[in-house]
Picture 1: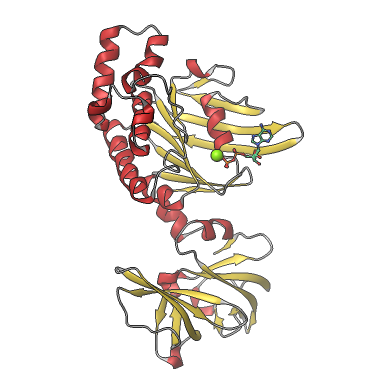
Picture 2: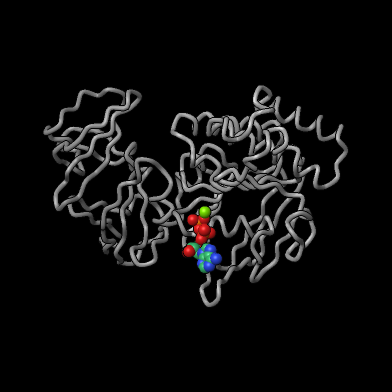
Amino acid sequence: MTAIALRQIRKTYGTLQVIHDVDIDIASGEFLVLVGPSGCGKSTLLRMIAGLEEISGGILDIGGKVVNALPPSDRDIAMVFQDYALYPHMSVRENMAFGLKMRGTADETIDRRVSHAADILKIQPFLERRPAQLSGGQRQRVAMGRAIVREPSAFLFDEPLSNLDAALRVEMRLEIAKLHNRMKATTVYVTHDQVEAMTLADRIVVLNAGRIEQIGPPLELYHRPASLFVARFIGSPTMNTLPATIAADGSGSALRLKERTLSLAGMGGQPMPASEVVFGIRPEDLVACPPEEAWFSGELAVAERLGSQTYGYVEIGEARMLTVEFPRNTPIRVGETIHVRPNMEAIHLFDTATGLRIN
Ligand SMILES: Nc1ncnc2c1ncn2[C@@H]1O[C@H](COP(=O)(O)OP(=O)(O)O)[C@@H](O)[C@H]1O
Ligand SMILES: [Mg+2]
């Protein structure tokens, strides 16, 4: 197994800097997910690890060796691409064997590894077919098989599931999770899909415009997002956010929302300086309550019934809308007035100017 370390890694195209001094320590056997919106630099970072993209600055260490100058073939890393990059004129078997053949691996070894990978991925019946004769999911398995037969010290995945339909995406996500539990190979997995990130990762790295916003286990990012960016990116439906101010309140401070002022005195800590903040609360942390206890009241505009829960979209005035999660099939009706209050332990505050979390 192999640890990977990125130290102050940087990428520039001419005068355009797309990766800014990124530091990540990936433990041996870890499943690390890089997540962020399109264009934030995920593929660039992954391709620098693979050796497909030159590193403009910093140090890349794989297994205790600086590999900045090593070509991809010498890094002992296998990459699975979004578009699979299979050879159309070769059979599945040949596609999987090709890389090993080029390295001069013995035929018996190739046969054994291809057969083993095909077993794991359940593609034995398709070994003699060409990629065009396979479904998207099967092609995805072949692309993974081609990586597995190399027995690399680390796997890199660049949005491997984006070309699949929703049902297949879930199925392949489970396959990848099972595969990792079995092989325990160091893995760096790129996606823009926060559900994939949450479900697969040991740790998630959230990237924003080439910079790291936060690194941590999925639930840490969910429950204690370090910034508004992370708060809005992780979690679906997304966290509710409302403008608020912190103001002096006697000897302590108070959080002032349009509809409510909350003394922060009882919540421990020092009085906070007066400032503009963003108040955040997740849909499941808004609880229906009697009108007199409500922080927010408004008309239910839309109800989404998913069976296991219901999402209510509540208009609270000034074009502001709150998403509220109701248990299972709570009988709410569009047009009725909804009253909710936040679960006090689950309130998030962010500095409006910097976007950073306030504790
Ligand atoms: N060859 C290139 N020349 C100039 N800019 C590039 C090149 N490749 C990527 N970029 C820019 O780098 C940024 C990051 O791209 P990329 O890593 O592909 O993002 P992601 O994979 O997160 O969608 C984007 O702004 C993109 O336009
Ligand atoms: Mg990309």
